[in-house]
Length: 134
Image (cartoon, rainbow, N blue to C red; front, side, top):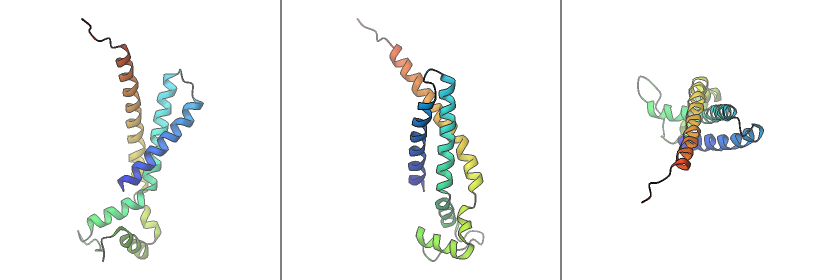
C-alpha cells in the first residue's frame, strides 16, 4: 500500500507544483507558500483516496480473527479483495475514505510546505556562507 501511495503522492505533487508555479508569480513568497500548501494538500488527498481500497484490504488482513472479524481462506491481497467484495459489495473497499483524506490532506500540505521552506532556507544559508580562509 505504501508504494502506490507514495508514487501517486509524489507524481501528483510534482505535476501540480509545475503547473501552479507557472501560473503564480515567481517573486511573491506568499504565493509560493500558497502553491505548496495547495499542491501538497491535493497530492495527499488524491493519494489517500486512490489507495483506500488497498488500505481496507491491508487492515482486514491484519485484523482477521480478532474480536470476531472474519478470517480469510488465503492471505493474498487478491483473494482478500475478492472475499470482501463478494460478502459486502464494492462499496466496502471505500470504508474510511473521508477520515483518511481528512488526515492526509493537511498532513501532506504541512509536510511539503515545510520541506520547500527549509530547502529555500538552507540554499540561502549555503549561498551566504563564506568559509574561513587562512
